[in-house]
Image (cartoon, rainbow, N blue to C red; front, side):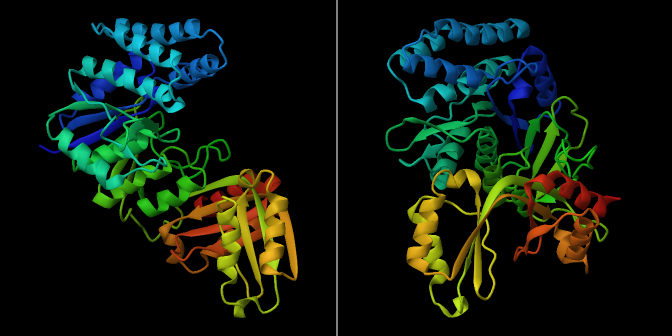
Length: 438
């Protein structure tokens, strides 16, 4: 029998009705043996996510504001789910432990992790699976960085003892002292990928509230086409530029092991979803896999005569950003010019400091700054297979009356990055999408 690792997001475990759906999904395929779950999400638009409620409790505790009534809302939510499912699981001891730790000043990571922890205990009981805590199995170093190989070894050893198990997503612990650490939001995707690698799964199914990936953001493009197949590399490009169905770090563990990902819809389990593999599935008539973008960015352009002859110029430029703890996104260059593209939020109040350091260390002839730039990634393995793909992009923008502030094709040749003024962001995405799909 094969093995499938599966992950269910917050909307899939929001209440008893949703949990009934996931039980049907799991029981429909005996190969679905290792289940990673999120904390309960919103049941309706005005509802609150359990993780948000827990963090509010922590904030109130830190400010000496009574939080017990708010915590009772959390208890009531889990107790209602237990009642809906007709299962006899006593979480009172767990609630007492969490309250005790809140009173003693527990860490923000600890309290943020308890939603997944309680969810996994409850769902394991409902499915009749073993509960396996990820504390002590998913390991971080003292700086919060995932220890990939140590994690894989620990998970593999533990899960080999279980035929079927439910694990909480989103968190692990420091390898040196056992302190709870969490991933960024959406990190249950990463947990699922780590579990898939550890059990050498045939496939990693990521169940959410959409039927796979779409070629563009449906808030910008009306009824965008679904993506049936896509490569890990293409997905990485789209995720980084804002496509948010899957946490961008979730691809690495399964990519290492060559395990495909299938993004599925809990509310439409018969939909095939999107398959993500090492190679994807390419057709001669399929140039575009997807379009995604983010904003705002700031572009700092540095001009210096004979820059290309000055050894170490790029290194000194990046050293300024490194010393100030600022990450960059792109560095388009010319013979005598170099531009650094940075998310505006990264710069915050440091722009003047960055410019002063550039002046001092680089002695440029000129520096210019352009803000409110939107970056759009046009992604597809077919882009490097067809003559005129870049012309199609620029022509579409020209026809729409949109000025291109920057254009760069990555060395992988599967993506073209375009910079436009922020007001042109959505019109540009629509123009490019229509050029490739109509």
